[in-house]
Each structure stands twice: as C-alpha cells, then as structure tokens.
Amino acid sequence: MIPLLNVPESTRPEGWEIWYDDAYEVSAEVVRGFARAVRDPHVPYGARGILPADTPVPATLLAAPMFDAASALVSRSIPQCNLSRIVHAAQQFTVRRPLRIGQRLSFGARLASHVVKASTDIIVIDVTAYADGDPHVEAVITIAHSASAGPEVDLDAVADRIMLAGTGPSDSDAYTAGAEPV
View 1 (cartoon, rainbow, N blue to C red):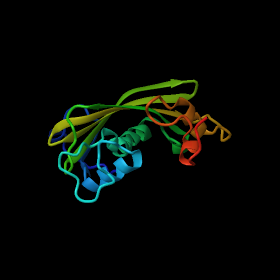
View 2 (cartoon, rainbow, N blue to C red):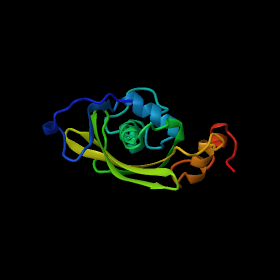
View 3 (spheres, rainbow, N blue to C red):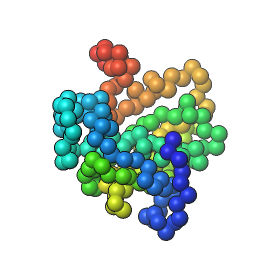
View 4 (tube, rainbow, N blue to C red):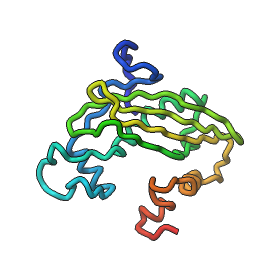
C-alpha cells in the first residue's frame, strides 16, 4: 500500500478524501514491463535500448496504484473489512491528458457511493492521477464485499463470472494456465 502522506489541504485539489502526493513515477522500464505483460502493440517492449520519449503510456498501467488508493477508502467504509471477501467488480478509465515517461504522479481518491444489498457492500470510488498539478487519468472503481459469504463461496469464480467485457478473460485461471477459456 502507498503510504498516506499528511499533505496540507491547501496543496491538493479540492474534493479528495485521500491524497497521495508524489506517489508514483512513470519509468521507461515499468512501461516496457507492463507493455510486455499485456502485449501492448503500441509500445516497442521487445526492442533493446531506451524507449523513445513519445512512447505511449497505457492508462491501465495505473490500475495497481489507483487500486491502492481505493483500498484505503474501502477499509474506512467497511469496519473490520475482510480483504479475502473483496471482489474487484469493474474499473473504467478516462484519459484527460496522455501520460509521459518520466512523470511523477499524485493520486486523489473519494468515495462516490456505498450501497448495501443482500448483505453485500457495493462501493464505487473515484480516483484521479495528477501530473504537474493537472488531472491526467481518472478511474471509477467498483468493488463488492460480502462479509456473510461462507468459506465455501469461491470469490475467484465469482470474479470470473462478473468480469466485464474488455477487462480480461472470462476464466482467468484457465487463461493463466494456458488453457482455452470456457
């Protein structure tokens, strides 16, 4: 988890419940490694040498640090939150300005909604990545948490069934094992 910095209200944009100042740096090697992992056709991840400065940076590179910011709000919203009972249901990115290699990013996060249905918390969190004081990438993260689901409930299987089109394979276990998804 990214450490929460005690940043004065006056130095961060308004409206964020959580603010992580200078929390992430977009480095060429991180971009190359991420592009290799997701087979991004726009990044020359297989070539040797330094990536050109105008190499496009995939917005989804920020999924992990944005989820870190969101998880701090989840732990505030659900007392005694059992992390093994969380399903990352959806995430939507909006690119306001393209990211560039070498940028240092700060993150703001706020709770957009928290609804409880059928003993399941549905939490929506807005997270925005800022570079040079300007918003660059915004994300809306939807998380489900069920404290009442028994241990017999396989939350990995549940996550596979609710995964949205375009966010990954419908059967991630089969995918990572090299099998054809069912």
